[in-house]
Amino acid sequence: MKDFDYNELYNIIPKGKENAIHLKKLSERLNKSESATKNIIQKARRKGYQILSGQNGYWFAGSDEEVTAFIDIMQQQAFTRFGSVSTLREDIKDKQNSENKQLSFFDNIHNESEGE
Image (cartoon, rainbow, N blue to C red):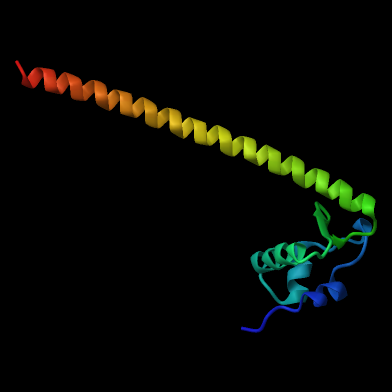
């Protein structure tokens, strides 16, 4: 499989939020599935391509202000997700502790009844 040429994105993704391209159209232009396109975008960002996104689609940063606003939104989303993950982990931990206490209680009752 040929490596993707990330420079191709400069020819497809417009500059500036007002010119954003929707995922479906971007995927069609790349001849990739939407999932594959998202992965390409993610890898491109990690390589330093300033590809931003929002409800209107994807675009190359038109200014430092756009990048800063995007970073703020991404950080807030990450904090929100992290909070949800932490809560779910605590719920699982509490449930497991509760189940272990119940098992221990029933084991003690069972052991006591066998000793009679």
